[in-house]
Length: 562
Image: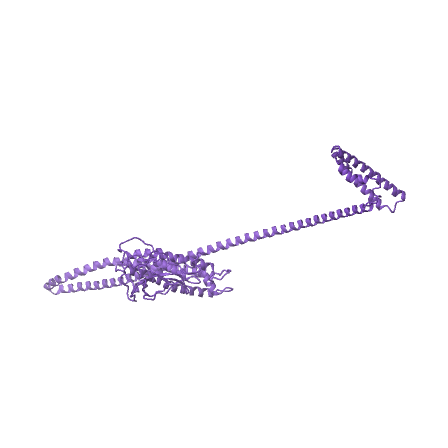
């Protein structure tokens, strides 16, 4: 069955029948009547052959279903076509009607085919457009990747250049600091040289005086010997001790003359070292000024004077963290050092507070001079579009370690020596807390170098206690309204309090000299223990009770965003 159907399909009889019908239609009006009849008979014969094949297939298909296989379908669909006078019996479906139905069906099939062709055509066009867009997107991705690679390369190049310049400036600053130390040392040696020259002059005068005295004694003894023997013996007895003393002094002066030669040799060496150091310092000064003249401001998105500048935010947060470390570690180490020399706990606290207060005063004064110097040098070469203040601040941000730290420490120690509020035993000096003073000066300089600088609050003894700036120490009298002495200053930015300080309040506080402390132990915040007025035990107790870090006030930097 399947093989007969496949053979009928392969022959393509219906295709040939359709082609003959179309050819007959094209030549209908050209052919004669006999030709048209012959064409119609030919088509009928071909159609009969096809129908014969179809009836054979129908028989084989029905026999495969058994005796009654396909009977119902044959009765309902085939028998009405085989009945007599089926098309002429006046039924509801005529031959014309069936032909119109077939024509409509064929038209619909053609429309469906046309729509399918249009759909496939539009689909192909959309696929082509999609491929074009994907190709354009890929080109854009490649261009973006190339631009990103070039940007990374330029960023790495600029970063390496910046690191190289920073290292070079750091080396120059280090060389300048070393040269200044050498100059300072040689100046002290120059003072010693002046003392040596003064001693040399005094010794030469003594030698000349004793030489003249010796010559006068020799002359006097020779004249007396010629006049009288008795008188000469008497004179010899009287003058011999004077000559012996003069000769002894001459021998001593000769030995001192050797020291004079040594002094002169040292003076010559010191002069050579001083000239060499002066040459080095002039060379380093020229390097620093040349680097300052070659400085060029790098344009950036934001202004370095803005409060939201990344340099301002990051460094401010780091300095606040260092401020906490100073309170909780460096301050306690300095207190331990002072306790070895003085048992007056209150005086030691005053020394620490005055040291950091003087450190900020000295650092601010030195930074103002440094900023004026930078502005004066940049004003000669500055050209827009940024302002001169932005260029100055940008240079300061890149060179924050250009400070005379040794000179600032010396100024703070001199201020402590002049202060009548603090004291130390005669066998001790304020240099014993020099590490704490050095760190305080360094931190104060860095805080002053910010575009929006940080500063400490103004504080005086016997002032009214401000709860917004300070907290009371645990040994304070909590009902006292006046501050007896300050322990740690409050950190400010303008009028805003960033970190609270610590103060001790007592009744009867005055502006007089510091009194003996009532408590030799360290001050801690009242928050970790209940408020009480109990005093600690003996000062010999060496347990380090670390004080808590100063509490932060409400500020945009207390949230830990950086």
